[in-house]
Length: 244
Image 1 (tube, rainbow, N blue to C red):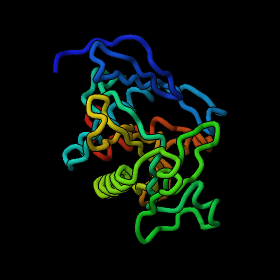
Image 2: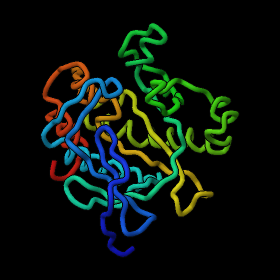
Image 3: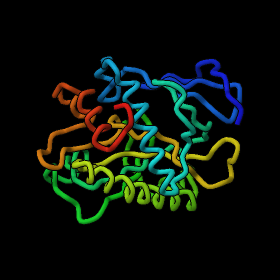
């Protein structure tokens, strides 16, 4: 692949900006220092957040690639940017829960921290306006958000990712409590297999110190616990991210 040149801004999300490139098959993902919670109601900037998440994500995507999980990630470009494949995303989020926390604890009245005998998988519709409602296979298939084959692929890939990441974090003394993933088709292979089209950083998962239960993820920001980036970087160091 020839070197690509970053072009115009395509999309500015809550914490990342996506840019076009000279090759329509690829995009540049720029990680900013912005952090948000509660559907954007709480906002801040945290020094070094962008570069920290860029490095953590690149390392995790590399570990998943070694395990045979295809993703949109191509390579790191600089401290805040990575090259990714342009994707047509499926409008649902896949959430896997290894420990009861957050909305699952509230929804079912189960104590936060309860260990689950096996992972629980959930689908949510991607919609900030609707606050990402819980949906099931029938909703997704009948309403045309994804086909039956894509639903099966998303579930299988999510469990495969969990099979890689849960022991990786456990080895680092961290409980991988829960996290979300998104999938889609590369624009240059719209009828091919789906691939992971998401980042994996402490912004999108819950990570607890296995010995103390201390939160090491974005809940530190949500709950005003402080030392957010210090804990993100500690996660990176423990799992083996270079230059962390």
